[in-house]
Length: 35
Image (cartoon, rainbow, N blue to C red; front, side):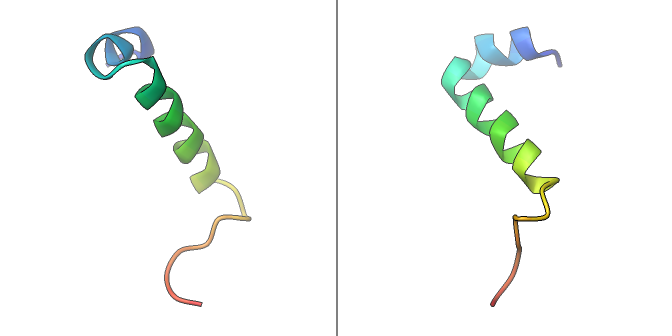
């Protein structure tokens, strides 16, 4: 599904947040699990 269709289904704000989260997942600053 393309970005434009996703925006139609879910709204621009939600797609923007999801893309930001996905780009953060590739960042070495994001950690998962317990500290």
